[in-house]
Length: 281
Image 1: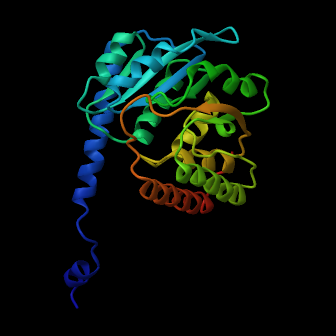
Image 2 (image 1 turned 90 degrees about the horizontal axis):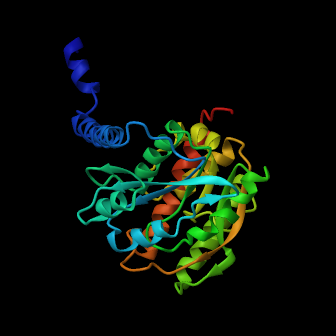
């Protein structure tokens, strides 16, 4: 067999489509970053950044932003919204509210939008980052309680827990899923958490800087963050919270079975990835 024939036999399939997708994704991120820098050339965020990734939440986002505290424990709070594409007026609501707003030209997924927000918070002087949903399920007034374990140096990363607090929603299957997946992660990680799928979270900025290079999930990323932080040796705590029904509209996460399957997939992928060649902190 000639060398040319061997080359054709063992050459992988052309990967142009994947490269094209990656290039378009990077273009969207670069466009958003450039627009943000142009809009806020001298931005200095407060010590506490309230980070919201928002996709088509025009009707709900304004109420969430209006509820953000001006300060927590004497620390100034700055809102930061990453608008994850969409066709409604979410971007206009965010910009009109006066909070720092980064606008992605297309929808990349909540995980991708949050990673972009983490980068911006790190770059612009944040000391603590609190993530909360744009749909009204999280109460911004509880931000002080969620930050308290960080400020008291009992934790590096805090997850709000609806199981330790009050869950006002009525979906029994989603509640069961919260319990099952927390149990699964506790067994994998040796932790004692009650609500690993809650997006209301507080981080020291050093935690985000450390775990950011290892985050991959563009959607359903909550388990990835917990697993990565635990495997990197950061202290994870919890704080009780109230969990409210969406202010309006429908969830973007899909039905219970679909969401549960995606959550399980992320657990498996992240555990496998972090188990091989896991870097030490």
